[in-house]
Amino acid sequence: MAEVQGVRAATHWALTQQPTPGMPSVGFSHVSLYELSGPVKAGAERLAEHYLELQEAGRVDRNHCLMNVDVLEAHGRWAEKPEPTEALVGHILAYVMCNDPRRAAEWDRWNDEVHMPDMLSSDGFAGVSRWRRSPQGAWGTQYLTLYDVGPIGIDEAVTRSAAIMPKLKNAGRKLDCHVGGLTVTLERA
Image (cartoon, rainbow, N blue to C red; front, side, top):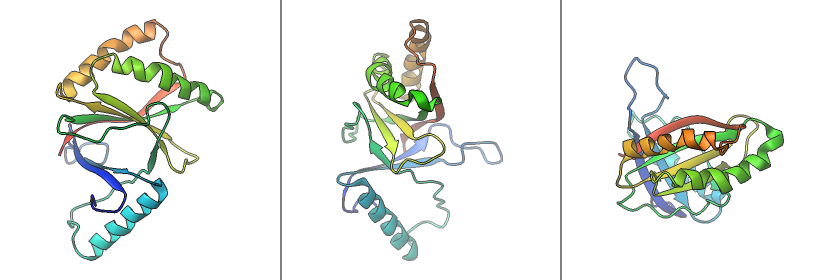
């Protein structure tokens, strides 16, 4: 998949807490991220075509189950995602949304101008990027935030970012229409 035209980086991640058979879980165990250069729609179509070719050629393990594909475009002030390096040890992947459509523009500005700088100030993250579904749908979260975790590791990044949250809330820096959806922690697979 990494060799498909337009793929600038391909990484494979495992959930830090793997599903236990027979127990409730998020329904998947791994996440592959394909970063594209050029038009997103065309790149996503090339990836889909190549995946089908690999399946038809018997080059996809029969136990592999593709649960979902989200096509996302970089969004807002935090749209520049550096290419992954060996120093990148994990991600926190968070689907987020504004629960009041009338305040969507305010929420978007707050993310760019307040929330992302606040989260980076925790010293838990090596970087952050924001993403929007492409195309946007009528239902569900339309935005994803991808926090890059460096050598401090996932557990310490979570601890540091959680530690600043009460102070931010008490200082009025958490917007009341901000809602977090599915959030997972990922480590290199």
